[in-house]
Image 1 (cartoon, rainbow, N blue to C red):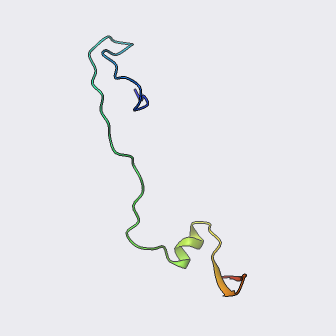
Image 2: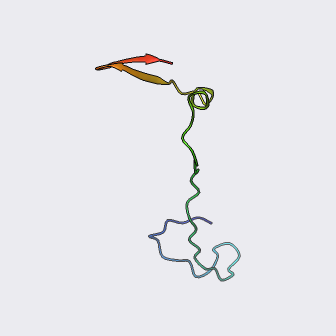
Length: 60
């Protein structure tokens, strides 16, 4: 069962009445080891722009 961290820990399970303990795990975030290439970004559905002049961008 997931509960917010700021809520007090449950002493027992509300369903089965067995003792429980609070476990805090790290957040699962994707890790990217290298920057995405232009082709990777395009295949992921992003529009890739390159700056050509002051305020002017060109689609790659």
